Length: 117
Length: 110
Image 1 (cartoon, rainbow over the protein chains, first blue to last red):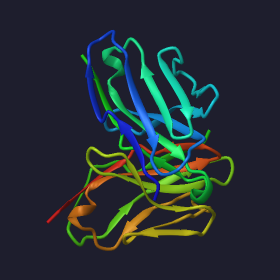
Image 2: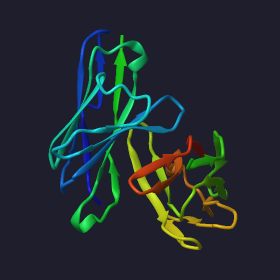
Image 3: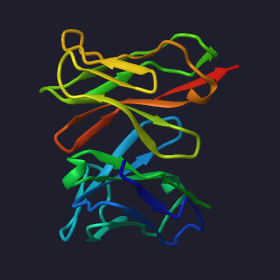
Image 4: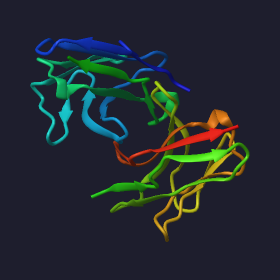
């Protein structure tokens, strides 16, 4: 199947700093990518949907100024957590919707563990 | 709204035991149904799926049947292995939107 990578896999930062997480589709183009957040022992919650070349669509309750999403190419979307605080500590997972030969299947990245001190 | 409810864990089984993880859903239409598996420290991997009523998804010895009458998609495996230890998520997809259950942690002991 298709491969989605995330970088970094783990990041620890100080409160007030910004952190950028990258999501890449390695062997397919993805016009649509999704960002999820997973709290410990809980399910994934969709944060936003990003479409290449346009603004992201955020779910209700997600601060768009805090979680900046850029989908500049068909293989890369980035999530920037601005002015991070300890409550932003979480596991962030992206997924990419395959085009062409992969139909509209969604493939998930391995996740990024963010810890804000 | 659309939602997924799955059996709470954790579940601990001996190797070669039979596994059932219950999953029921609420949806206004006819969604596609999925089971994903998450191994420690990793992202989600698609285990199996079914796109319409009475479809059976199967993979690696796991099975689940899309039951519209009971709005269920229970995951089963006849004989679990230690390597099956992971967290299992039931999910439905309606359009581009995924709705996930809370996950069920499975530990298989030798």
